[in-house]
Image (cartoon, rainbow, N blue to C red; front, side):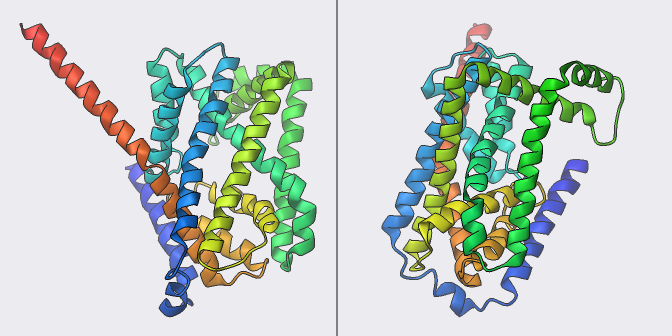
Length: 334
């Protein structure tokens, strides 16, 4: 009942945001941005989103290697593609992470390592967003014409710097941090501080290993940054496909703000929040509301289409497991 209520609230929030966004948009102005689009640019964007899964698989493999586990790139790519599909169809936008945990757990990883590796992979993605946001903040401050977006960007910059400072602080307060983590195992708090501290503890250990193995750390930061830049490039390709010109550098620097907002767990798989953030952020760059909505919706559909290979891999895997179970049950009867 609790999960059903949460899902219902997410759907309600998503529909409410869409209603607010579309109530002043005429059908003609919206459709005029769709018809006559360049299909080749859209297809290029979908292909790029598909290829990003292999980059994520490589990054995930490096993280697992930090825990002493080695998996083939083909296995990790398959798990990542399946997870990407379920990220699109599950309400949280992170449902695919459960499948990724389950698969590496099935292949011999301890439960805490499997969970930590996926959490740290998500954290690594945030590193890429942080690098672009911090590096591009001066440029965005100079080109946007909205005081509200400037304030929003400033809040995110301060938040990212605060998180980075807190992670660094936990290194100097290692003993106190460890005691607090053990204490929270015996105290039930409304905010589940024990879980939060577990995640921070894993991030701290992970950062420590990456500092020691700095080549892996630099590679993870590089892959994460390139991945986020590619997402911005896809948005740029979509804008070009529908005949709207937005400066590439502006898109690359501004789109991480949209990603950060859409990652908030308030809507169905990020839908609605992404569109609202796109309208607000891109309006400050001079993009019309209808155009921003079309770009965001096409981007969301492209994400779904690029993940359909994962659905096929999951169905094949499920059928193979079912056939194996039938064969085993038949042999047992004999």
